[in-house]
Length: 299
Image 1 (tube, one colour):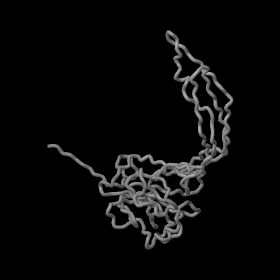
Image 2: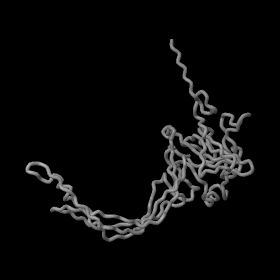
Image 3: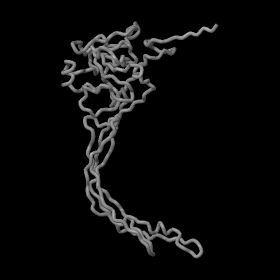
Image 4: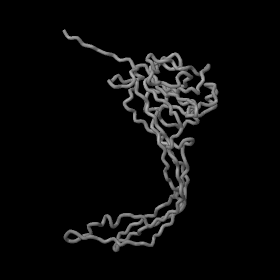
């Protein structure tokens, strides 16, 4: 439940350094006052880099904040050049200053970054009222069993003559985890993720086949488009904090979005907007949340 983009960042390694120290600049004094004195004496006598010594290379680990990831690893190694500086200053005429010319030897190095962001959209934090959000994945490829339950149907009719608002929910559903804040991670972790280096937003990747087998009894979870009809849904429900089961949803669906029907997308990433089912404003396509109507009669 976040926006995603991938960026290739060029981060060249620096493997060597040569310094040319032959250039010498003569700094001109400026006189002012009566009797005349050098009025720029402070800048003329200031310390400046005179020579470079102890040139060496160092390999360091580059880390990024957890909204900017390198998926499957938390960092990459980068080589840079370090050196020590010997400074000098002139105190008498003529005032001179060495002009150092640096020439670096570099090698190409690039890294693909996976960047996540969350616009929030003013989604309220409902934990203070005893509720939480829970993400769910529904697909015809998910079979029900001891650990996987079907969807608890909503009070409103989700399948009409014109549209099936929650396709794939006739089969099993799997939770992506609960969360209190759309701008933070899941409350109960990511048990099916391959590693702990994850974006700080709600969701699940369902890539850890060992945990899928141990906890759900399935070896894989495939919801990507196939030649057959496998249209599914991702939805977010509102759940009581003291809910009795974690295997099916509370029948109050706040947001939903259908999974893609084909795999013809050529972009590196594709985002799908979810339908906001909480609004009771005129013109909203789906009226699913209960509304409170207050009428005031004055006498």
